[in-house]
Image 1 (cartoon, helix red, strand yellow):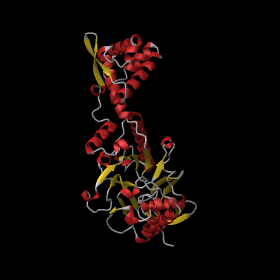
Image 2 (tube, helix red, strand yellow; image 1 turned 135 degrees about the horizontal axis):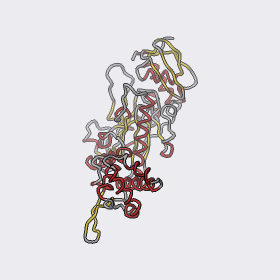
Image 3 (cartoon, helix red, strand yellow; image 1 turned 45 degrees about the vertical axis):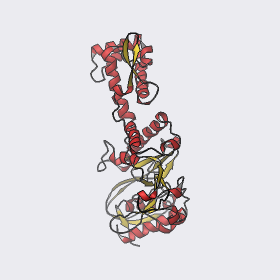
Image 4 (cartoon, rainbow, N blue to C red; image 1 turned 90 degrees about the horizontal axis):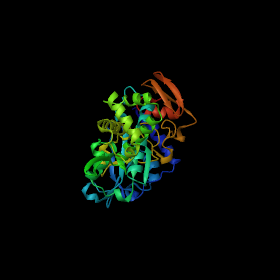
Length: 385
């Protein structure tokens, strides 16, 4: 990035902070703060700062107009201490991070920016559902990172004191690690014999049981041939097993409703097995494990600008995640309403703020939010006046 480009972005970031109110996180004075300035050469983070050292947050942002701004998940007695042990750790938010470019099936070299963000949003919707329905967390903040991911901050008092190993257990659950049919069953006595029953009272067992019952209802609404064909779509279920399963569903629906996957023999168990695999694949969330287990992690400040895109790090109300558009909603108003000359060095398509552009190499005048996006991503330099 050329110096005139850095100078332009630095100045416009300052203009944004002058007209934007930034709300600090809870207990801001107990957190460590860090930022990355607009400097040439290797990226260097300034960290081990307390809010006392930075001063008023909005004054700091307007004065330093940093490229990136972070605060710690952890709370400390002395957040400005240079040595981590000297900080005096108290507790930490439970933070989850989903990076779209790290997701299975996503190729940053092939997929458009919007496609990657759509894949990331699907994962964060799964994550919110798991944290809400299975854990019952209430104090959750959902954030678009401004780049390629989403963050979820959980601040329920009961989780803040969890250690690394305990947080790793949460990670494994959310990612569906080790979840198979055996893991979601319990053994209970039925007369003189034992039987395996799904754990229907919560967790992955409840999720699988819900899907099994939905499939059973679907089968009962079909004629026999359709139902048998539907069952044979599943792995290792042929004519014989399909007929056994359909008979068990028709005759003993109540047993299946109670979680009993013994009735119907190997066919029902196979159906429960493949349903478990599908539910885990579709409803788990591909979170970044090191972020959640790191008690001292720094995370982006909501309301700040992402120096790699010029988009705002945006809080998303939980009931608005589905409608959130990461290519429109985080575009700062500061960068709307006028055009800027840039020299495109990395041509290609850009989609932003409900507009599409196909750019060629060379000088061009663009809406400023597009120009800032391209300059921040290293795809353009500021045009000469």
